[in-house]
Length: 178
Image (spheres, rainbow, N blue to C red):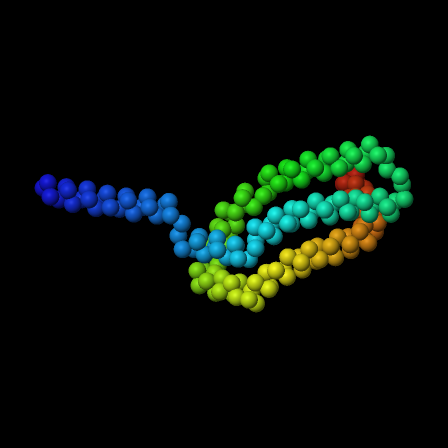
């Protein structure tokens, strides 16, 4: 009886140690996802995206002011820039890579098999993959600028359309209340 109790206790102790060890050590999928995120330059890309967003907002503000041909009160411009700094500080604090890293890893693990991540790692570690990663950042930046420039081109028409839609929605709502 003592031997059976001892064996059962040892079994549960061993199971507990394995279970606890498994919880504290990342599994292979997590390790692969972390490596893939690293070689893809996701952290740098993420950080640069926040900075790019800030730069684009400031450029857009300047372009809008130039196109409107109105002189901006210096105090307003200073106030606007302070508000942009507040926004950027908030985003850096709440959207930095370190804040979202674990969720990104979970996303990779959920959507990619270990085999897919291993193949992607092999590619991104190759010369071709390194070149692709390096160019991807520039492509992303330029693509974002293209979208922003197009948005500035269509802004007057878009604003007019939105105003028209808003007016029609209000009219429709009023007609339905009667």
